[in-house]
Image 1 (cartoon, rainbow, N blue to C red):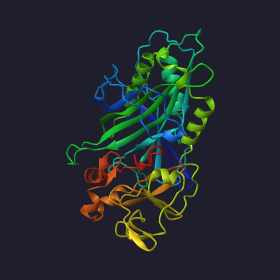
Image 2: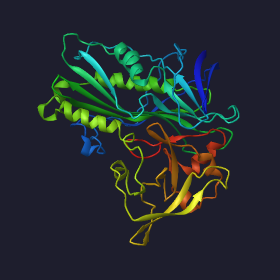
Image 3: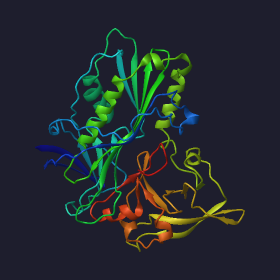
Image 4: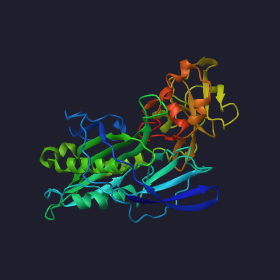
Length: 419
């Protein structure tokens, strides 16, 4: 099967559109990793944004079966104008095709999706094989054709959720997270690398009868498959679509639509508007040390001053991309190993473990780190390196994968961690 893919390569002010054909790889089993499907109580409002909903006893280790047949060819491929503020990146457009059996009519008259992610089109960064990449081309920014929200609305919910025209109930789907990451749990061997491709998701379901929103369920977890350069992410989106349609079909509105659980329209809009703009509202971070991510969001700095103890630039072969810091309060030194981050007036640095702060590059309303391969070549003290975490992988394990596939990480607006 042949898949057409459109990519846009931006280098400086130049724009080159490249169209090519690529053979699809074989499909592998997909695992749903520790999903939580919660519905016992209202979703958190702003002051409780970090509190998870209680678990309801569902199986947290289930494996979703794959759809029958091969992944359909990409259709209606089109170009997007999506310009990162650093060069050497490509944009790959994908449009998954799902396989779901349409169920019976539900007690729902309308469906509405709110995508409250900071960047509603971007869904992750895809590695590129060093041996095959063209000069100047690094990691690929991955985007779903026509936007993820539109795909989910038109290609999933409208097609596979049967509505009841006589019902005045609206089902509201809130997308908090949908992000592709690459991780590893075993060291790179060269012969059979075990890099994984994971789709993380966080989705809230509400019902509305016109006077507010009743929280129904919180769907949070991930789907994982072994990463191969020729393999696409279609199966991961197939699995997410299946999960969403299944959970919607199991909703019981009489159990959840209680007056005491009602979230007003005003509170709903305030909370999700604030969540969507968590990072974009911080145009220029206040200079100083931030003990927590929450402190960063409200621009609350600690201490009097900060000094650089050590800077990392791969012995002059890369821009200054990481550092170790010392904080001073009333002229007394204090460790920064537990602090979240630091801003020097120009760049933001995030602690990824044991006081190792990496410098992030601003990309639109987000922050990105892509110097893993330079980190691999540095002499970082073992007492520091053993505590470094990138995404869901320890630095000691993931670093050698960067020899063949460049990996890029972005700041998760919900958690303040790199993913």
